[in-house]
Length: 250
Image (tube, rainbow, N blue to C red; front, top):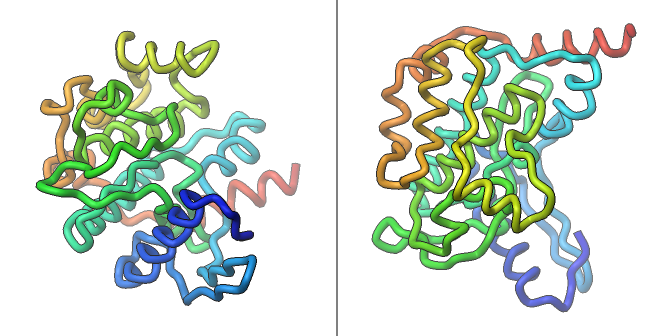
């Protein structure tokens, strides 16, 4: 990536480098092999991933009316929660930008979290700054500029899971202000009954409007839906290859 004279952008790049380089012991975070700084560029050497989940569903699934199986979404949830819990427990960091484009998948089916440019330190379990992520995935308390903690990322995960399940972003809005009002004032989006009640319950709890009612990572890991997919043997890479091979044959 090209360096800029923007101090905030430089800080974002350096923060991304710092988090990635000290997280290679977590299998749920994209691996870094180092970086090279030149006068006007930063080159980050990272493991090769197939694509992000946003590109996967928008470019390869939705056009063919192919949906993520619930078992694949379960593996997405497990991977993201494990990555977030690692960041919190090991580095005392909150990600603050959970969305489909920041979740990567490789050809072997490994699902990993990336992009730590706005990740922030936690002080007494609360985020120490109010740096914004993508408005579409912000929790109600972040939009209201209230204090927030790791449960803000739990909200973003809930929105992400609904988007992946339905192959479209769950809120309808005309402009950014309208979107923020939808998130804070409208009923939270729900999954249809075609999904399992365990999955629907899991997402509903992620999308509790009141942050204090929203579960933290250890609580989410006790949900039946999470535990069943953590233990489930499924070849995500085989599913991905089958989807893309079918696309090529068409």
